[in-house]
Image (tube, rainbow, N blue to C red):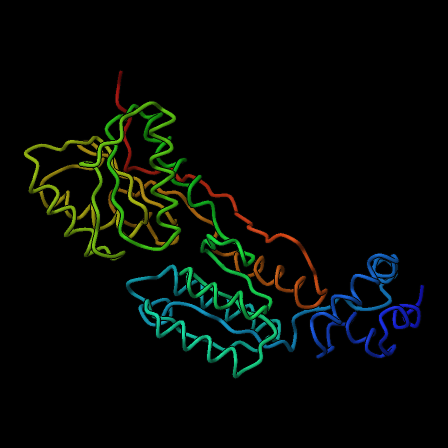
Length: 345
């Protein structure tokens, strides 16, 4: 099988086949897919990869659109994780000579309409969505049939590929750790956030359910947002309604919330972990510098951009065609420090 044979089967020129295999063609996606399918079915791709007759296609020179919430770019102090992740993606694209343009979303329908207009006006090779997992927004992106990968979000319609961290299982690891230490009354500190936060809340409930522990709604504290100040205010209000602590431990869905909770508890004279144990989740903040050092679940945010670009590369450069979408989750690690104590008996 030669390039000429593939060209004849596909009804295109030899140069077109060559440019598709090298990832430099600007022709329509259906033609790209047809050529790649023929090359794969005939074994030609395996032959050229093995013999290194052509270089592996890359995203160099491609034009990508980064879609992310505005606060992920602008609110550095309030959302360090979002900001760090976006900066990591920008760095990876710069190193690979990928042209990256940003579109900042708001939580409203107008933002979705503006994105739809942009995609109609401008041509992009692919889209990287970070944290912006609103169903309506993802539906618009899916309707444009542009290679897309969602980072650290959940597409409930399962119409785009995604890569993220193990939010649900990470939360389960945190709560299981508290259960293993003898805690039975475990509270939850959360906020009305994105789908990833709901997964962490589900992990909390799953652990208690599996351990046959009751789930008490009165032990659920909801902060106004993800900031430590909001967490501190929410815990202050919660403490005002109780003469004594109704829980022996508190799982906080982010480290930022955990820091706010610790501040509020210490202001009221409670000792950590002697009076109440605290576990956070994320592992990106320098939590070994605070007192007491916070036990947390470290999530692997650093590899996410590389994994996301690898998924996009298969879609764009190889014209990968599937009847399903990929959801890749990276594992997490419990970091034991000083904010949890074991309960005897």
